[in-house]
Picture 1 (cartoon, rainbow, N blue to C red):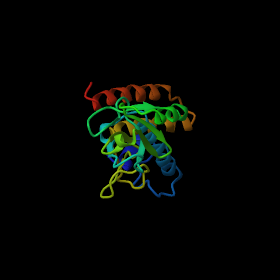
Picture 2 (picture 1 turned 45 degrees about the vertical axis):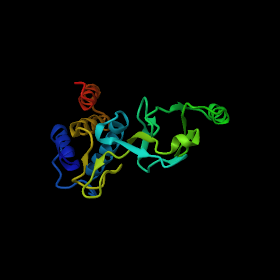
Picture 3 (picture 1 turned 90 degrees about the horizontal axis):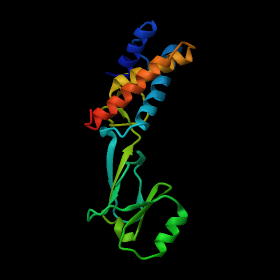
Picture 4 (picture 1 turned 120 degrees about the vertical axis):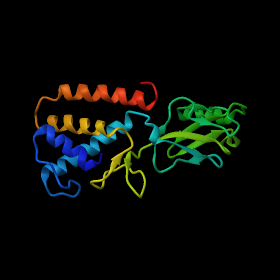
Length: 200
């Protein structure tokens, strides 16, 4: 399924004529559908740690500059040293200031700006950082991206979620009842997340 086929599936439900092309179209309905698809895709990508969006970065030293596609760290044990020891997270600068001033065998990390800092600094050498990419659009041959830009773009999560996300947003925008569609979207999102984790 592609961006175009997803939008055309929504058109079938809301009684709009199918489109031959949507991206770059001057048709106001096509432009609205593309905007709603981007909004829905961004939400779906943010709300799950989709397997195809899980990536790793390897630090050469401290600090590690985060990759340009970095969205967030994976939950629980996202940073480990080259020796396989989990680094403990520090979440505020006051705690970090204390940690770096006290020698410790326990490795710690702190995300500041676009960098991961390590304490002791030697813990950063060869450390592995697991993260969720912000890129959810599958585009050949360029690779994943965060923004829709072609009719044949696909998603790195189940595309039926994109259809359901566009549908309820369309109905909301048009002032139509959409509560049932949101409930169906939420139920399917939970089910697909569990399936993606192998927990269905």
